[in-house]
Image (cartoon, rainbow, N blue to C red; front, side):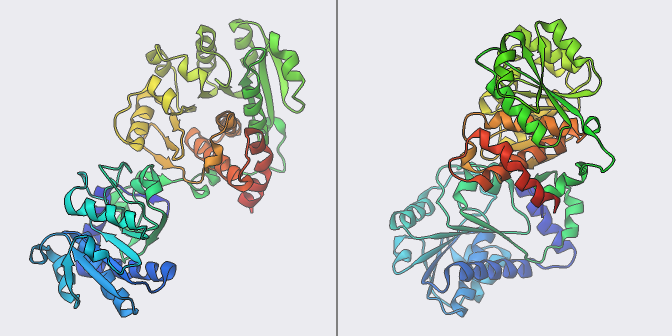
Length: 484
């Protein structure tokens, strides 16, 4: 289940299911039942306060309360608003609840060991206020665990942004498919454990919805990255080139080069300024070194058609020379990865860069670098998609919720990167992984998604104490599991 839906697409999925003859009543009943089941599986039977909102999320809450009570829990239901004003299916579920319904105030929490937040779902468009905000703040002040229905109230379902205030959930249960707000921070951090449950919406409705956002996993790109052929040789696996900085600034390029080699490029060369050849040679063995003195030398170095993928930016400097070298690689139609300095170097010349980029290019900015080339309005998914369309290349916007977008609108959100990756040099390794995959002929979008997943998985396997130097040696374990 890689598909990630927008709030509008989730509403469309509900409507499509109803058009197929599945009633809204049965969808709400299934939603509440599955949330209750998830609660019982994780917390067991607990005295529970169910906080119900004035819409369908509140209707789910009434169903949850009924099933928890049936399982033996002592349940108190508190409603925001008037019971008589509940709409449609929510009103029906409220009628099926045979217990008391109390006002939404702090007294509703007395005696509770667990709280169900069924106030507002992913579709909330304005900040919390009044009684809703006050009671959720009271829940947190009391230290009670919260189970969020669909989305912690106050988190916008598409962006993951907190509109004014949102509680920290221990568990969030959503339906059919996750929304992007479940995977993007800060919403992702507020969801706690996320469970996606089946409520009877057929997968076939996805064809009518056409989601273009996916959660990154090997099923999306593994077929585009064939294993080495028994009849292959190093030249058939591509030759990656990594541009090195000058003396004292060579480590980033070596990290990238080592990653490109480890991920399967047949040959890797560090294009080193002559002043840094000895420094690079002291550290490299399987990675080759080719010296260059000026832009003419660098273009000549790339003229060999077997050198098919180029990484520029790690430690390379922000200057005209960098811009010239990037444009030389693009003019030769190489597959190109632009990272760090290669992005910043075009902060005042982005139109010239965008005019030369092509479908086999990947840009790997962090938020600061992204802002030097692209506009920063909107959530992370929309910004990345706009940027990819604007520049005509794949954009990999790094962070704890890395987003990879293609010019055609395809987009993946990566979710396996641990906090340990926030260490010097890890981005250089990621750029090298992208380059090594491009050298093997993996298309740019799939190469970026694969590199990001491999990067995260190697870090997760290593655990605390990770440094960038640990990532490439950790890849074989990941690759063995992947190929199995």
